[in-house]
Image (cartoon, rainbow, N blue to C red; front, side, top):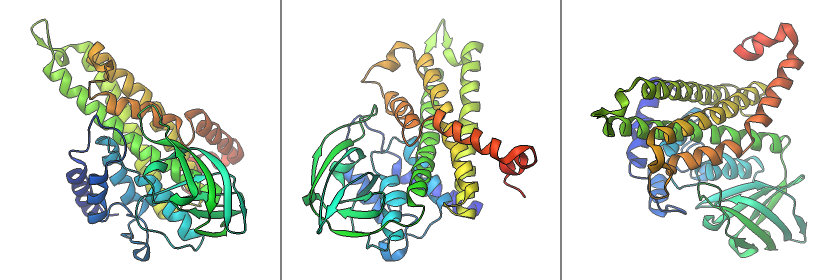
Length: 339
């Protein structure tokens, strides 16, 4: 993606998500309608599936904007996960909001049974794609009983009881489970980088407005040091997420280089999430911890998302294993992405 296209896409995304931040919870249907109209809802899918045929790097730009504005829409689930999974399995991609999850189902004679936990956005989805150990199963709402659940940011993470007809089924593509995990982690890393940006922007703005001892608290050296440290964390997180999206675009999602880059991005954005959220609340003081304050729109997402799709510890363990396997001669090429 060249710089001009990136700038135009970011400008479009900012205009679409500009008023998304809201204390409301649940699915933002009006925003989703706009995303569909602008082609951002299915950015990386082919035109035959209603997509815009964008790259993973394009998607990272849009997801960062979504995180920055605390958007309540399942972009990762519809585009990067369910849409891709159905396409990879050779199944038609239905219209509307989609979600996907890896799990186990008993599929027999066109009927599926089972229970799936923490399914993102299930209550808003027009269809659910399930990756079992051997199959990709597409289910409609008529086969599902949804019990509402939520993560710390009050985003839907529902319990779904499956007992009904299968809409479509196909053999699971080779390596689908691993790629689904990488795709989810990359999407979450992009969202984390965006949410960290939103939290820090709100904190810098507050530090310039809050007056103590006759001057804005942002003029005190101790506060400036905190903001600078949080800014460094944001820069590192954004760079890691952007780099991983670039590797995925260049090498493909199934490449080992992509998995390593995504592992680094998810671990780094997760680490930054804790620092930025802590700094934001320290600068805001007690007011920032109240439910009524908008700061929670970003910090609760930072805390929730850093543990979803693989925690820092999980991805750091994978990075360490890859480094040990590479050995002394292979360590630099592994990190630098060069032969």
